[in-house]
Length: 186
Image 1 (cartoon, rainbow, N blue to C red):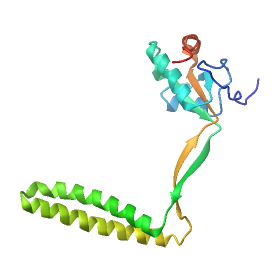
Image 2 (image 1 turned 60 degrees about the horizontal axis):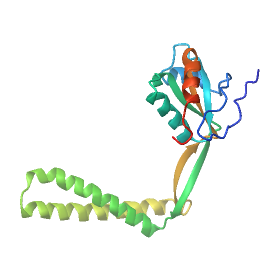
Image 3 (image 1 turned 90 degrees about the horizontal axis):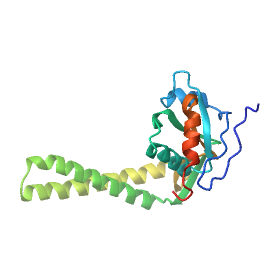
Image 4 (image 1 turned 60 degrees about the vertical axis):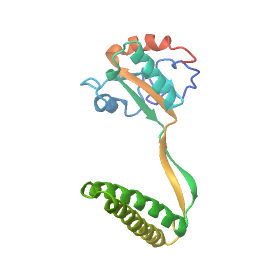
C-alpha cells in the first residue's frame, strides 16, 4: 500500500475514486477539524480546486449528511505572491493619507457625540485633514525607510495542488454514495 496521496484528479463535477490512503497530515486534520477522537478519516473525493471541494461539501450538507464530520484537506501547498503594481514614495503617501482620513472620520464621529451643529462640522474637517496629513507622512517615511528594497505592492495567497474531502471513517462509505449523486453542473 502506498503512503503517497493519490495524484490530483481533474473533476468534471464528480468525485474522484475513493482512496483509502489519506494524504499527509489527514489524521491530524481529523481531530483539529472536529473529527472523531481517534482522528481516523478517509478521503472520499479529490478535486483540483477548492471551489469544487466546497461544492461537494455543500452537496453533502444539502443531502442531510453530518458535515461536522467532514474536512477539506489541501495538499501540495505553495505560496503565491501576486504583484499588484509599483509603489513610489508618492503612492505610499497617498495610501497613508487615505487611511489616515478614514481614521480621522472614525474619531470625528466618535467625538462628535459631544458636539452639535457647526462645531461638529469643524471637528470633522479638522480630524480628517490632520489624520490625512499624519497618514501621508507615516506612509512616505515608512516607504522611504525600506530603502528601495520592495518598491511594489503584492497580495500573498496559499494554494494547493489537490483538495481532498476527508470524512470520518465510520461514515465515509455513506459520504461516497451521496457524492456519487452530485450533479455535474451543480
